[in-house]
Length: 109
Image (tube, rainbow, N blue to C red):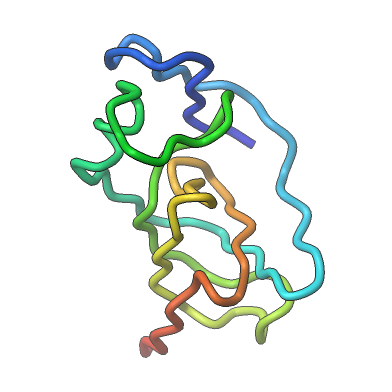
């Protein structure tokens, strides 16, 4: 799958579109096929290395996303996902998130 990755802290030039393996959800996780992602001001602070809690490098940024759960919750449920900092992965095609990190909002199709 395609994902934005950051290998070192710095400016926007550190954002790279790369191929990465699909996430494999484990116990208590969900897999989400992302359809939309937002960029939050905190994402810029983290990317620059100027945030209090920094992820281990390399990482995939993004804390806000919306998509369809494809594994471990009822597959096909449409959700809005808010990831916690240690699991910022929304700037990718798919994300693996802990169930506690996902706010499930049922939307009509």
